[in-house]
Length: 67
Image (cartoon, rainbow, N blue to C red; front, side, top):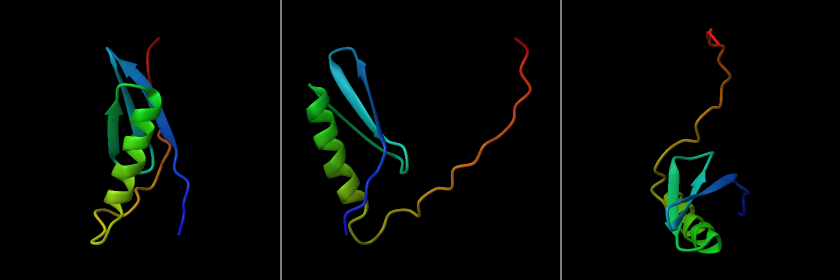
């Protein structure tokens, strides 16, 4: 079964870091494409039996801040 996940990518020095937002998995690469490819592999491994975690629930919180 194929499922889509959301990834964010940013550059940290000479490395690109890719993080999956739905599960706590991240990877890196020399290029953005490498980082995303490595992240795809890491997420696939994450869901290889036995399943590592249950998908987290996303919640919204309200926080009082002073600006």
